[in-house]
Length: 326
Image (cartoon, rainbow, N blue to C red; front, side, top):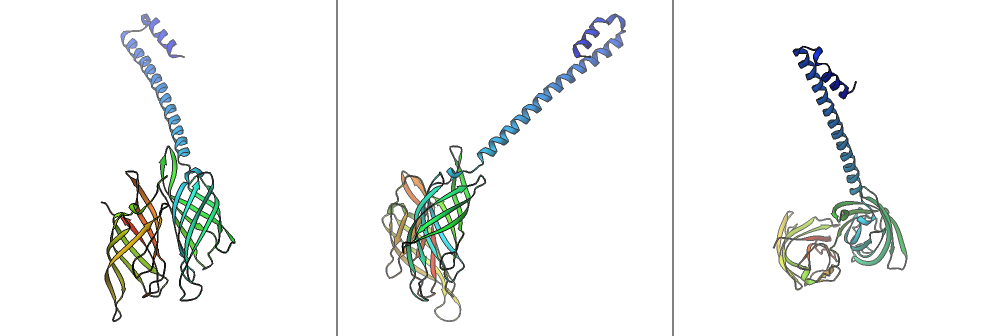
């Protein structure tokens, strides 16, 4: 029996019921009306909720997917070798087109051909292809044009480790990459890439302010590390004091030696550069992170490689400079 027929029957048989029966039957009909209204509203609300949840889940799934376009722009890359007889380390700049292709150039510090011989700084260009999966993992292939004229091919595996949304699309800010094959020195290379701002030109003015400074020595038999603060003037000169933990000049212990340093530097338009301290080995620089301030690119992080091994410890020395607040 429908709700309308129940109401019709109630209104047309009042003469058959006593007052108590009228009240009871009227209450039941009203309760049935309210129950039906509640069921209709609840069903409608549940339907809207399920529809909203499905659409949100679908949109979320779609927005969270990485694509080849997530890897687009110029990335500063630090190459660190693991294992092998002596460490290979390098700096790389690569430009990704957002459609599955990339190209760039690299400078790699290799051990000397003989034990005790100077390290070699080899330069090379490269190109390749890449494919980004929806979860941020990826694969690729790189062809490197070696100094001797030959070409070396290698497979790549990588993962995006930091991203931000730009116009509703995910853009890779940082990634971690591992080439499949070892380099000739026996190292397994690991690569950290960080995106540089679009359309900027670096200069000596990009290195200005106070920078936390840290170094580490590797490959030698004697441990070595150091820290300090350098002040860069934006005109080609950094000065400061570095505290180096190294063997004591006498006895078996260690000593922390405070050293005043002067680091003349040159920064190129692409963020690479050199430092040429007096009576010390030259240093290779690469700006790995920068902010644009008043249309000027300001280095927030710099990686460096000392070209020659340390004469005391025979270590390959590398390090980082990180900008402190002004």
